[in-house]
Image (cartoon, rainbow, N blue to C red; front, side):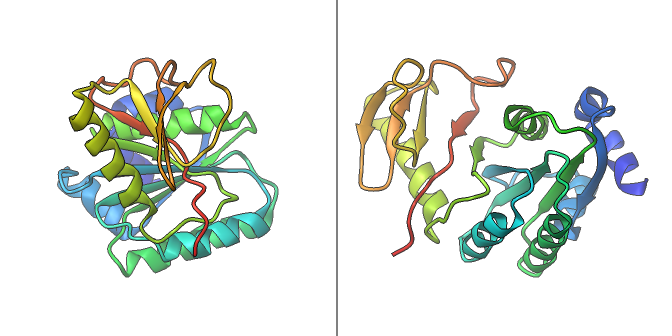
Length: 219
């Protein structure tokens, strides 16, 4: 209850929007300190990871994520009402271990099983409310390189500056062929730059960037 009251005091818009959808919220100490001080200025990237059951895959992703550079990153997991009992323990262990590195971790447990897009919507609305400048999401069944977030965010900044563009594009590790929605503008060894034609939350501030999941195999 204390955590929920803290979030109501600091993120009223978010809590009001999803108060009937959440079963509980778990925040590690670095996240609670940020909320208490109301200062997220040092956070550059907000990373959303939606998950549902399949803890065996999630654990692999968490192992790789634990080796990633999460400096200046806030991580939010959204569990879509999993029935896998191991999953909650895995998320809590990860949050506890990242606490030692002063990485803020939040875990949202939904009351109902809806879908991945609903989970991403929840996470992105938090980041929007907190005015985190870069939005990213990662699937819960991938492996990543230790510097994957730097690759993605630096690529975004470079491409925007070189082409004098606004935020109507995304940088992704997916080699998606659905060009109806995301036309490929450029490609590198570990990334694709795509035209952004739609986003899940149309109310996101235009200064925000959606960085999709990066399926970057570790060497």
